[in-house]
Image (cartoon, rainbow, N blue to C red):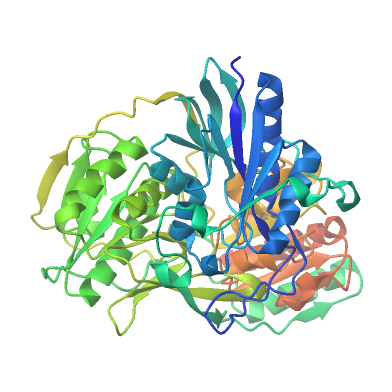
Length: 590
């Protein structure tokens, strides 16, 4: 193997939950928090050191941040990184993901492989890697579980919410590393080397440009408390008594009125206004419910600005009439689906007449396309939003889970305004009557640097996001005991979800993780079983109608954020819950 020049981007983040407060400049406050290396970056560092050492090459770690961020470089060097570069300058404060990617691209130097973490626990944009690839003119792949280099090509297994894909990518390339890809880089602080070999650079070493908050096309403008305020009712006593009292409480709350599915919105998809403003909805290889939710929300936005919806899809052979019923007013079909050429074709189309907004689901394919598009158009990207609206200035305002049980409010000042949305959190509007529509086909070439070999998919789509009942498990539930949850799951037609620690262990698929860095759900009931109640996890279930928690520890944080709490061993109380619910269901049917 040829010696590889490996560059790893790493980031310092607050350790644990942050409270979501803003400073005087509208930036999320991070001062005073204990910090650490971002968990995804720990895997990127570990993979980077391995690739460099196995090839006889050299590894370089780069971070951008205040003086304290040098600590993540020292830890990386303690793991085996050869060189370290610290980009630090007060003018960079408040940079959004686009400006951050531009700054980092100016520091990357002649790398064969650029490794990044697939996301971060504080920002969760998942866009830096793809943006960096666009700025450097390189292919991108990620998030990857397995990563090997042979004959100057990367062989990787890419992780999706509902499956995996095997790909081969020509080098040089940018690779985003998944959190389950390998054991993380973790070095005790007392074993970190001194930082005297770190190379420190400022924006003076970068190409002339504007930096920081004022140069950023997207900004955090506020933090909103979550709408639901819970008043926990905590039960103690024998398992049967707790189960009986819990069922009575759930009945009183109206939790069992229906078990079947989340109801459609009473609102029908609105008709187009036919004004000059266009909302482009990018519908990639996603299940129908994802596409339907996205188009309905796009149609609602278009009405607010007096415009119409253009659906851009990757499949030009299927009937497009459903897209029109769900919210599209015209359809553009792409003949190819490789993200880099798709983004290039769209950028050319939008160069002369930009749409008012471009929206897509928060899925890996869509994230890469829109991240590249945001770079090409200099527009910025709002990512992983749970809702999107228009403010009085005609700008898009997005909400996404933040720390401390809050929602961060993000505004886009770019043109076009670009956003990815968690479609499972969007309403399913009633389909409208079909109407005549314009249909165009755009040719898209394949990406010559990427060969896709095999795709394995579970086809789950939005099943978890739209479930009426969700059972969330933590590390307090051994995976060999998941079968003990089946009676409850089958009785309530529930979907299984998990904390990040559970999916990190591989006990459940990555697509089952809830939280700031996972999925968000809004079920009628959420059963929190054997989990402590970390804020980052509970943010993913914050819109649940009723939260029932089961934990043996009466001081577990989850009891402060539930509606009904059972201080019990879940294995002891679960049979009584199931028996009581079966009895109730039998009475309802008779």
